[in-house]
Amino acid sequence: MNKFNNDLSEILISVIIPAYNVEEYIEKCIYSILDQTYKNIEVIVINDGSTDNTGNLINNILGSNDRGIVIHKSNSGVSAARNSGIEVSSGEYLIFVDGDDFISPDLVEYMLHLVNSTKSDFCLSTSCFTMTGEKQTKKEFIKKIYSEDATVLLLSPDVMVGCWNKIYKRELIVNNKIWFSTELFYGEGLSFITRVSQISKSIGVGNRKVYYYRRNNENSATTKFDISKIYNGEKSLSKIKDSLILKTSRIINMHDLHLSIYSLGAIVKLKQNKLDKKYKSDYKRWRSFIRKKYLKLIFIQEITIYRKLLLFAGILSPWLVMKLDYMRRKRIFNKSVPS
Image (cartoon, rainbow, N blue to C red; front, side, top):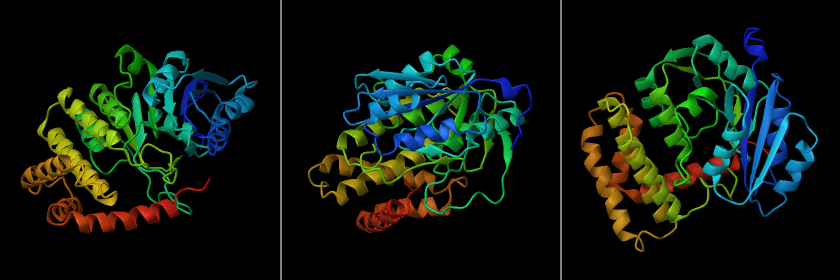
């Protein structure tokens, strides 16, 4: 690509990878970073107390590599792992990659292109590869937006939740003491990025696909059912709202939409696992929340008709949404990005 200028070509980039029991994926992940077209990179891998062969694989790849930093620690969760990576990083910019994902050769180069084009300390792509055989974005764009629009975008269903597929000025993160919450193990990424978006002067946004997000890892926090994860994700969304710096109506509305869709997802997961009777009070509480917010959300033009219909279907027949979600997830699982 060579779309960044000479000044940026000398900048050190820290790529931080939290890794826990990802022996099947970690080699591809690390090599995809080492093989970047942009070479001025340090690769920081935090082995978060893995009980499989993940730690040995990391050592074999990075043990003698002068671009690698390996941290082995007892299991403390993904948030603590990422924080450890930030603390030891030396790069002017930070990029996060999950240990079971991988990136295209031009991800770092593209992210720096966004930085250079928009003169922003926080940049992201709205798109990523999620399925086998998926094609690159046809019409690419790059634009500069500001805090309110960026926070609305990150809370919307239009961008996949996560701290990955983004680049951050390290100084912005450290000087403002923005760390991943160790109280959260589900939804911690959204809490982090919305905090960053609210304190950033501007945000660079593109739509080129440079990140491969795996959706068929059965051990992933987003794949396996665990009621504590659902509670923790709900807690994360509550904390985001309580700690909002920008409390505009657009941000509040998009937060309500996000929590409504999340509540619908919780209901669907309970029904799929035949636990709606066991967690009857939660089931009723989430369904009641959707009904309450729907009466407001239906009149907001910024929300698509599809999302309004989805919530209406959830109110009318959670069983139907469950069946449709099962079909959707099966297709995603079978067509997820290859190993």
